[in-house]
Image (cartoon, rainbow, N blue to C red; front, side):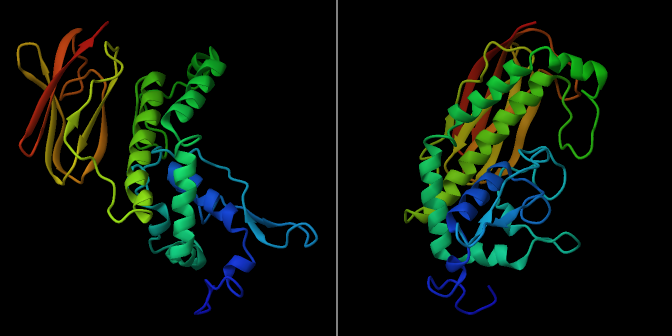
Length: 291
């Protein structure tokens, strides 16, 4: 990999690596933005030469600090490539990961594979089905777990968010994954087209679930960078809480409201409105909090 010609198909890394396995490995690690990827929890193996003499990436493991569940390494943010985050200090990833990522042919393979997976196992529908099936399978074990280890509402290293309920945990997992996929769409798919993908217009979607108790998800799209404000109001027009107030890059965004006001107090059941302001765009939608 230190050769000036390391990308050569006859003499470079393609002759010693199972390239497809590294493509899949990177896509899975980047989807989760797994802080331990590439440097700590990473396996690479080689079979005997009569079977396959190339280096193969995998198996994958250790994702408990992935999917926005970690408060260091900037991994709570759904944007940016983990492969491009390599700060000074210990536990740095090997230099050749960056060289691999810099190869245009390799990145094209990543883009093509992502496009293929995005319509199947990387679709939100498929991922959410896996999550929902896991919740159903766990059943009463969820309550027994938190009865034995009552950690809800308390910080546990290295979690980025502290949630009061298991339902909030699940909704955050889905919301973060949706935002991560949207960002990967805009970044990866542009390798196959001349211009990067961005929403063509401002939109504010209906909150889901709606009615809700006590948490709901609010999605919106902004086609250009600028200042964005998203706030919740009660039926009398009084502001309850500001969810977003600042500069944002274009893309599909998602925010969680957990039924609390600016001071963290639970609000009463009833009708609420959420207002999105971005540039000249203003839109309001209604949601109902049940208790």
